[in-house]
Image (cartoon, rainbow, N blue to C red; front, side, top):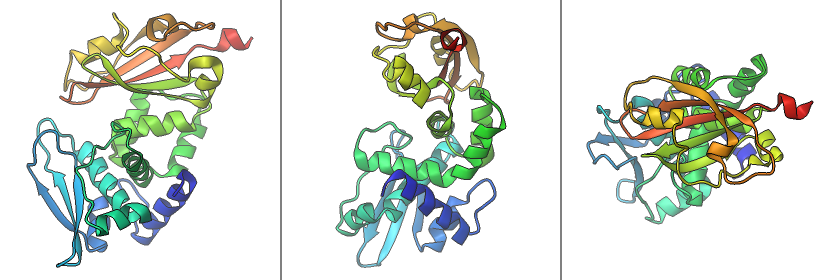
Length: 268
């Protein structure tokens, strides 16, 4: 199932389940599908798991209960990720064969199945038409506005930021870091076109807003400052000024950062 097919499929699910207003009730969707829900305390590193039990003829979805270090939006994304494994035909076939596994959600795993389930979850929780309307409203949105959109639809801030960067025409990029190490980097189409498709460096830029945000776990505070591509990127023929916005993701030690490239002078 490619991404366009996934967008169409998740739209049909929301329509069928009468989930067209925010937030999407993913627990209702699971119950309507006859999936048994099993919340519990499975450890800090546990995101989710779905299994098929042949004797019962039922799928069981395990997910963590809320805690001081586990945000409700992250839990919802994990549950939607497991629904991806349930709905995507190739994934479901593996589950029926007994090939269940603990998932790593929110775009932190490079495994193809996990990334497909992540995209399914992001698409289910934040509809494509809402995102398109969001991007059409004005030229550019800040990270704070993207996080507010995520709160409205109760999806993870990371997934909302990634979807924005993949939809916008603006020159920007998203970095997810943890303990000052880059976990992933995703550039918008325009940023990639201008030579910034890859970050190159594996560590967060020193003296950056992201470093400061990492020190303020759970604060919910946004950090921002003027920056430059030479701080963040390995050697490039083109160098640009950046505006950096950083947001600590609860008590996880992870920081979500948006880099906005100042390209007006270059375009002239």
